Picture 1 (cartoon, rainbow over the protein chains, first blue to last red):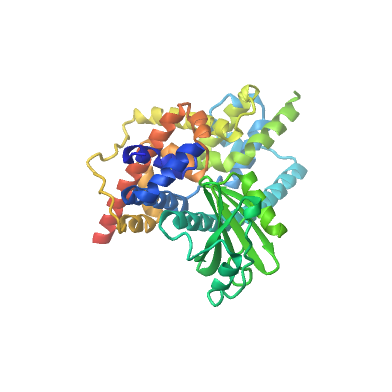
Picture 2 (picture 1 turned 45 degrees about the horizontal axis):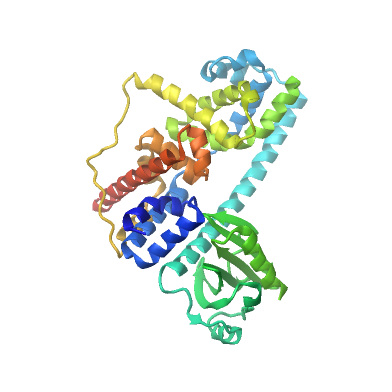
Amino acid sequence: MSCERARALLGAHLDGELDAASDREVQLHLRECPSCLAAANQKQSLSAAVRRSAPYHRAPTALEARIRESLRGGSAVASQPAREASPVARRGWVWPWPAALATVAAIVVAVWIGATVTARRAAGDFLAEEFVSAHVRSLQGAHLTDVQSSDQHTVKPWFDGKVDFAPPVRDLAAAGFPLLGGRLDYLAGHPAAALVFGRNKHFINLFIWASTAGPAPPAAILERRGYNLVSWQQGDLTFCAVSDLNLAELKGFTESYRAQ
Amino acid sequence: MQGDERSSRFEQTFLPHIDAAYNLARWLMRNAEDAEDVVQQAYLRAFEAYDSFRGLSAKAWLLAIVRNVCFSRLRRSATAGDTDEFDERLHSPEPTFDDPESRALSEADSRMLTAALEALPEEFREAIVMRELEELSYKEIAAATGVPIGTVMSRLARGRERLRSELLAAGAKASRR
C-alpha cells in the first residue's frame, strides 16, 4: 500500500470504519512506515483530546419536562415555533398536583440513574481507551512480546518477580489460538501481565492484573475504535482480552481460555 | 394509533436521545438558550413527522431534524451579518517523529477545544461532534446529514485537519505567554 493511499484511509482505520481487508493493509503499512505511523498517532491524539476535553452538553432536566408537556399539549402548540411557544410552556401550564409530583419524582430518579450510569461509563470508557491504546501500541513497534515462546512453561516463570501474581498461562493452539508470548505492560499506572495469542493473521492481547491492586474492569463487552474488548473477573484476578477479531471469535477465545 | 399511545411510544423512542439532541444543538448554535429552543422545536417537528419514521437509527433521525432546525435559524440570523470565517492563512506544521505535536494536542484543555471547535465551519463541526462525542457510525452520520458516506469521510478528514491546526496555533500562543 502506498503512503498516499494509507493516509487517505487512516481516519477510517482509526474510526474502525474500514472493511477487514483494507484495515489489515493499513495496519501492515503502519508497521513499516514511521511517517504514516506518526501521522496516525497524531490523529489519535487529536481524537482523544476531543473526547476528553470537548464539553459534552447535557440537556437541562427542565427541558425534557417541557417537551413532554408540549407533546401532550397537542398540535396547537406543535405548529408554533418553540421560541414563541416556550413562554406558554414555561409559565402557563396548570399541572394537576399528583401528575406534577409524579413527574418530579420521575425526573429525580432519571437524573440519579443517568448520573450513575454516566460516571460509570466515563470510568469504563477511559479504561477501555487505555486497553485499546495498549493493544495498538503493542502492534505498532517491535514490542509485541518481552518473552517470545509458545511454551506456557517458559512464559509463566518469566513473569516471576515482575508482577505480584502468577498469571494463568495457557496454550490454546488446539483451539486455533496459539500462544505467542508474554509482555509486561502498565495500565492506569499498574503493572499488568499481557499474554499474546494469534488467530490467523490477527493478534489478541490478554491483559491480566490483580483485582485488588489494579483498576476495576471495564464493561464485560465493549467495542472501541473497531476493537472488541471482553472482560471478566476470576478469583482475585481481572482479565481483559482486546483484539480486532470479530466479537464471536474473541468470545470463542475467552471461552477456550476459561475452559482450561 | 390513539393519541396517548402515539405520544408515549414517541417519548420512549426519542426522549432517551435528548442529551444527544441538546449536545448537537448546543455545539451548532454555540449558546444554551438557542439550543434549548432548537431542541424543543425539533421534538415537536419530529412528533409531527413521527409517522414517516421507519425504524432506522432513532438517534440519527432525530439529529437530522435538530440540525435542520439549527441551520434554518442560523441562516435566518446570518442575514444579520455575524458570520465568521476560518482563518485559512494558518498553515499546518509538518508531522515530526519525536512527536511534540501529540504532546501539544494532549495538553489542549476544554477551553481551547471549545474555541477551536466553535471556530470550525458548521458542516465540519457537526461531523466531528457526531463522530467523537456521539460515537455515531459513518453510516448514521451520512443519514443524519443527508450526504453520502464519502462526503462524511472527507468532512471528518478536513474538519480534523483544521481542528488540529487551530489547536496547535492556540497551544503555541499559550506557550509564548
